[in-house]
Length: 275
Image 1: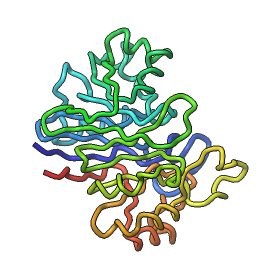
Image 2: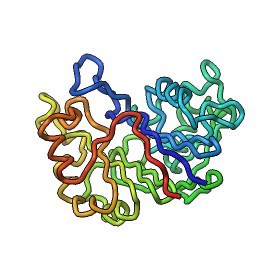
Image 3: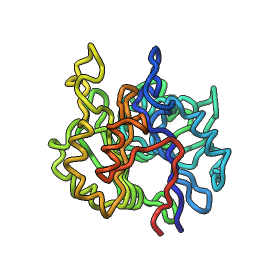
Image 4: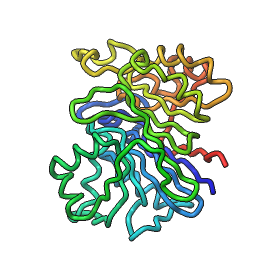
């Protein structure tokens, strides 16, 4: 069995535009993916503040149809506990969707954080989320496997992982530095499609902010390091900050990225998983 990957959002945690800003390029929802298998089984990768709009997009299109206990999706997996990646979980509690025993695949660190802190603990105690912790590989369902790949990123609350789906697609929206991850090239080369952190284009992108306090690899570094892999696989930039000129399709920066063999992710693009 195979399925379709649907990009549900491509912006950094605050979306594009962020609160109080105009942003660059077209509006973008916060970075997230869905995998919809051909039998309708649906996995949500990261649960963002925009989750209602993102699920509405799935509900509006084939082949989406959730099959488990009336839940909006059948499985959730999370990269880490920064605001854009998990706070949409509040929509699955009794005040909202009222999910039932929704399998939620996370690292042990993320599991501990959710169990120790409200309101996330209530979602677990009240039976809305069924936490499944570890790094895998996990067999989530027929033809759907997950592996959680530890990566270096600010650990105020939890560790951070990339999400590998069937060792075919890698979702890696956040990392501090490629230098700090020795297996970066090996992991990216292992996947046919990789969605990679492209939060910032330059260090002076946000006046008055010290980007060393919110480290991410710059787009040029990512392109330089992994450009030699682009001929045989899809390398797609995502998690774009609202200030990033790559978010404007006609910008010179976006054109340079495309000329190097990379793609810039767009909300609601879709990719078939390898059979």
